[in-house]
Image 1 (spheres, rainbow, N blue to C red):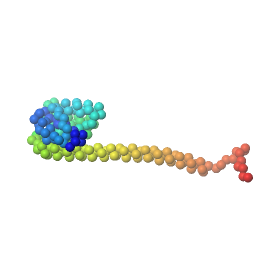
Image 2 (cartoon, rainbow, N blue to C red):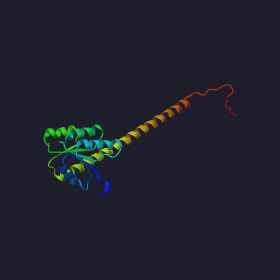
Image 3 (cartoon, rainbow, N blue to C red):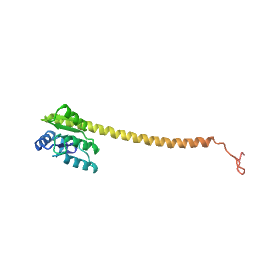
Image 4 (cartoon, rainbow, N blue to C red):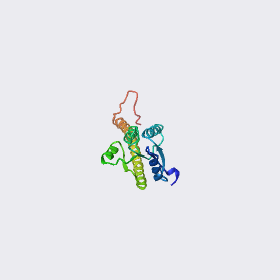
Length: 183
């Protein structure tokens, strides 16, 4: 895969062993950035977003991390307007914890210990869905803009048409000093 074609993934986990294992699982398919805490990830991702830099194609996020857990981190990303897929990767793998992850704005969930092939496939699928969602949103915006422009053009044409209808339906007035030369 060409370097320019690689997607970007962020791995956010306070355990460097897990970050490095996830990096190895995604290697060759994603350019991986790592963050050791939710706070660090939020700070950099939100700063990048505000600066207009592209957001990552996917974030893989642990739940249990220091002061800012994965749930808070995910909520912070969503509140900042970041829409990239968030995949929770956690040993907290009960139904309640999965539901909390989805309620926080997560898109997928992988239990720890994780299978590298499952992590890669899940990240790739999330990336494809997100790219398709962005493409559809861009096409929808373009269609809406074109529709508004066409409505505006039609409105202008209707005003012009109404002017000509009224002009042609007006009776001619003959003023004293003006007469048709009939002969």
